[in-house]
Image 1 (spheres, rainbow, N blue to C red):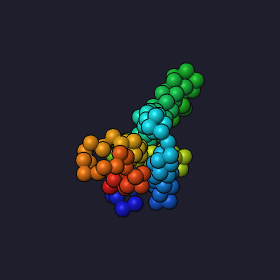
Image 2 (image 1 turned 90 degrees about the horizontal axis):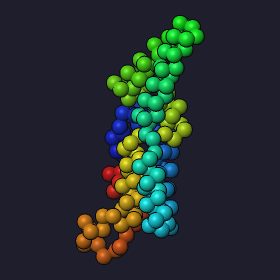
Image 3 (image 1 turned 30 degrees about the vertical axis):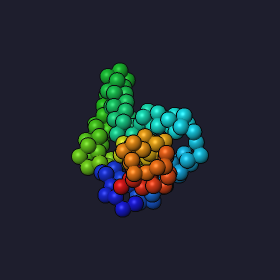
Image 4 (image 1 turned 120 degrees about the horizontal axis):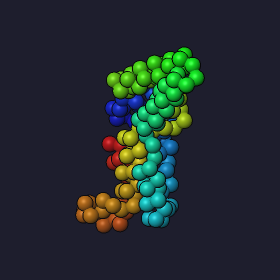
Amino acid sequence: MNLPPDRVQAHTCDRINQRIHEEARQRVLDASNESETQISARIHKLDREWDIERWLEMNASALAFTGVLCGLFVNRKFFAIPCLVLPFLFQHAVQGWCPPVPILRRRGVRTQKEIDEEKFALKAVRGDFNQLASQSSNSSVEPDSAWKAAVA
């Protein structure tokens, strides 16, 4: 993978980035054995997949909100939770990294760019771009070529 990584990928271990990349590539290669309906269902699933930003925003806001509620109704010491969580969210916004990022990445949570790459390649395999490539008499694109075009 010779692409310049996005901020999250730049702060993720190369081994994990490569694993996420290879898993997506394999799904695209496997799509060559699927029907157009199955590929469309996979694309629809990718449209609903949560990216790492959404996971971080949801987790940080849930923890901060819980800390505020517990601080108000249980014990004031719970106000420490939002005081710890919100700087991590700020750090992620500025640097693209915060302590939960490595945990989420190890669990396979992808960036929007990584999700879009797989979606683009699946659309190419499905034949969505055939009208654009009029020089090709082939009705669909080879999965490996689609993957390489998507991540280029």
